Length: 183
Ligand code: PRP
Image 1 (tube, rainbow, N blue to C red):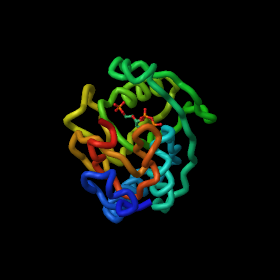
Image 2 (image 1 turned 60 degrees about the horizontal axis):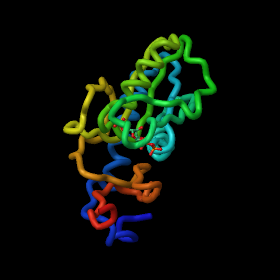
Image 3 (image 1 turned 90 degrees about the horizontal axis):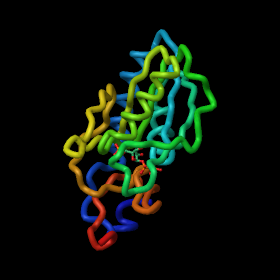
Image 4 (image 1 turned 30 degrees about the vertical axis):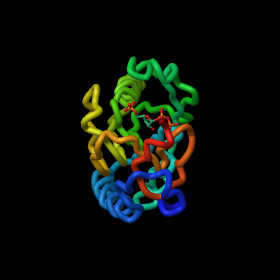
């Protein structure tokens, strides 16, 4: 759906579909170069990363294997604890692989912090991070993300995979949710 379809639920559009696609093409060109001489395994973190994975993979000129992981914190109230539960593990062993973790957003950084530490124990040859969006002001831990689409303010954003109570993931842009929706 487009922002105009749910205009009453939005405060403002933050990043348009066109801007997202343009930036993903730039990042894909970087990844094309960086992995020209080695195979890369793209690891998507469900569910938010579905959109960026679909668009980013198709923007690449190199072929890349794809795998998925589903994780969740132990309930919303303990999200800040950084404790993550694996709900669906990878199908691929990481031993010797060049892994590029693909995420929709780095918020506190706790999810990726845990994932990266966990992946490090699985013997990957290298691990890098691509995130479509990052909220620098919300960081509780610093994540060394090599490829970042956009730094955005710490507003309640939805769209392009980002949800509010499972809604709005299909919005093509990223937008700030109007407070009346969640208050
Ligand atoms: C979102 C997002 C990241 C994480 C980022 O996932 O996709 O995985 O939160 O937040 P953090 O940096 O504060 O850890 P969420 O748990 O909402 O699940 P979803 O992808 O299924 O929406």
